[in-house]
Image 1 (cartoon, rainbow, N blue to C red):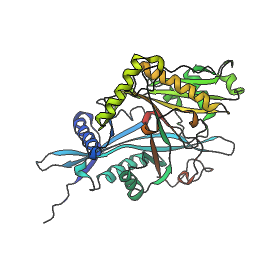
Image 2 (cartoon, rainbow, N blue to C red):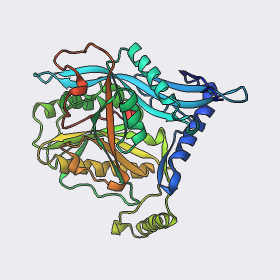
Image 3 (spheres, rainbow, N blue to C red):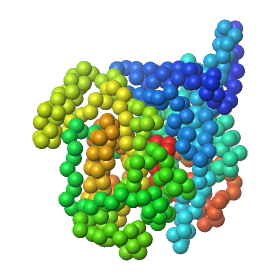
Image 4 (cartoon, helix red, strand yellow):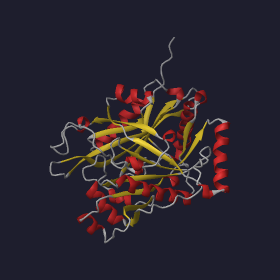
Length: 396
């Protein structure tokens, strides 16, 4: 006799009764992902399951609930989503074309309930909410080697592979990095940063229409512009009217106050070697040894967003900005700084990073509506990739 599968009910997350169940699912997925003695990256949401979406314009968290043998219920899976308007292309006159999109993130299914359609039920219900909110497209991001996730979205949910940005990560050393002598760094006010970003990223995919809300968020620690040393700063209006031959810009987002990360499963020898580099760096900071921070205990990160620039010297100026951000992260006690860039991003060559700490992402997209927000674009899912892509730090 074959036992019937338990019914699964998908509903909105209730913080009062679901937090414990959601945390159990998150822990179960983490334990399941670290089998075989492999190192894994664990995320501590600091008691707030909504931390990765609550700063978005509109957001929703869903749980999949199923009956247990004892007459109770348990959380079998969770998913998070948000809706916003982003740039999807540009007209021939370089005016931005905006599309309303839904972003799916944080999909988790308990190991005991996998291969039962729970993940697809969660995705289907989230897409239903996206449509209710007027979203024209849905997209998600995962690591390229996450075969199970890629199969679910492209094989069962109708998504298409779309973009392949890279996550670049650099450790925060115990010693401060010397500032660049060939660059002058200017801190921009949120209004100035908004003007510059709307000017430079007007045609860049996924640039958010509410960039002003991003820049004024308490987690955004500032926007910094690098220009050649000796260049005069006379305000953002003068800069936009006559920019220097080369320049670079980025903003810093404080992920440390939203969640913490931890590397687990590392061999003892690796832990000891990393600890030795910190001891030497602390004892002789003038040697500027690239010490490895303690990533084997919970650590925070600063995310660098809005990274861009122009001119032949832009990568060098971007490097100066990254050094500045490193020192900000060091003062705050972070373990790493990270950014995410497109494969052909012009300033990518200037971003210092350790390849072993980074990841290659895969973004998949699906069209939800038959109509389009703006005729000149057509179907965005078939558009070729641009040189740059804007990563919204609110959902990193």
